[in-house]
Length: 240
Image (cartoon, rainbow, N blue to C red; front, side):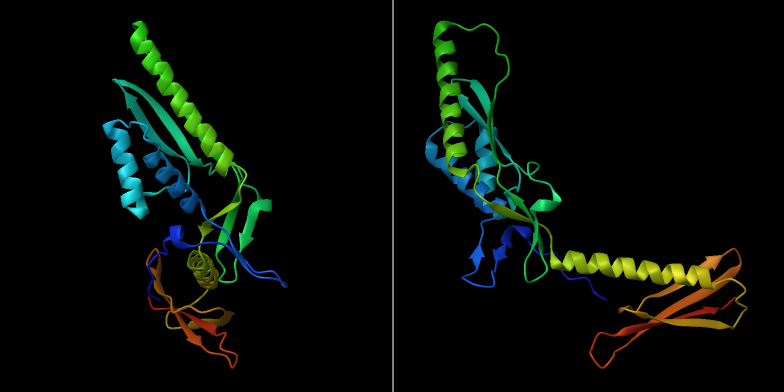
């Protein structure tokens, strides 16, 4: 079976479809972080070259936006502070926050936004530099307060496992069960003899198993049932 390309999780949004009423689609963490990055660009806060590169990369290349908190460095008169802003990806990791949509994608509910200012010791400075640094810290703190007021507590959902990832995981588990059956079926199997069994599931797995000088061949074929679900016929033959 050929692998399909991984789905871009930043493009998947959780839609809650109640039995009554209209469906509601929630923003994901990427949406919120993009809004925060846009707010930072519009704020006029000076960025260091590193901070400007990080912000331009986040906004000009959608795939660069993270689902968790982002790091941007501010600079004024050679003095720097760092902002950590964005959806806190570790704040709501519990089974009670897990949800699935009609396509089988799985989501984690998140409501916590991180907005923090980090600064390192700068040693002694003259009065003018100290005032510049104090104003930079104040502006950074006010920006974080605005982000917290607007975004913290609002429901967002991030897709942590797509339907395709779940399918591949289930398929891998099924094929490992076929290998386990083959290992268990080798006992007392003579050269040229076969053992077979049918399993619920679909796999075209073909593998060679070697134990010392003994060689076995596992061959799996799918036969479709009338309901289209399919079953796998597994055959183990000792070839040497």
